[in-house]
Length: 356
Image (tube, rainbow, N blue to C red; front, top):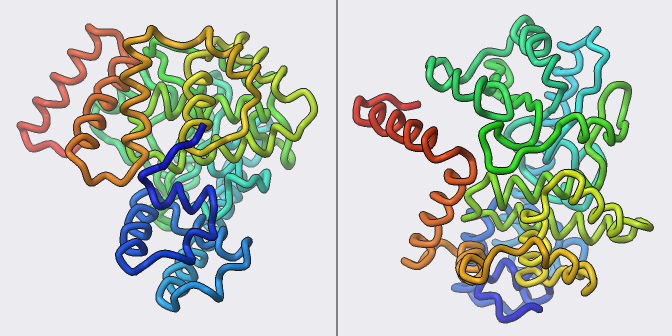
């Protein structure tokens, strides 16, 4: 399903050997695009894994080596922060579910390769939010959001607490109680997610493979802005490629999608992974998820905009598509009345010079 990508990074991800033919201008473009998408470490890993390292320009080797060191350092910091979180929550015996990058690292998934993360995402049962928040505050974390309106936004409408920041280590923890905003046009029964979590160590868990993929899909195609999100699409490609080797994965994924009501995000995930990254998705799976497609007009617009915003952010069309997708994400996140009120409040605060 792949065509000429228009993205040197996508070209490299599909065939790392193409790097050997890059001229200086192409290297400049590729490295810029990789940096914007936080994928330099991933390209470095591809060069090593494919035995291309010694054939790359010396300057590129230096850049890749720096990216490798940075990714390794950040992953160690993330896992250490997770260790500190567990220490702070000593005595809390309910499941602590690691999400996103932390989960990929904890599970040693391909999606963790070269990944850089700046915060830790965990999920707990909603009934335990107050307990977990207070234990973290007692252990030295502080709220990074102090404004009353933003506090209310997180506590009443969002799917997570206001971010908690540790001033000594410079890391943030996002404590979730579900994976989608409470006000969104899609919602998920978090208890169903917690019912299928898989253990890592002690009371540390991750989502099931199917739910990890669905979480990434909703984060990108429902709750996210999509633009400059090639890394997020790549993590979905990686999970699909890795989990598809597990017996019965596709049947479980389709059943789980129906159970959680997340058909539209999965449709977009599979469609654009296959279209943009050449992900191997069985034809019958694409056919079955076709029932989740939007109408022809919306699909035509998405087919135009999504591949465009996965390319380098250099064109006027990229900027237009990005703004449309940004507005789309807000429309999906809140009902119309609340959205108007929220945007009006944020705009008024900007005019007053408030930063949050």
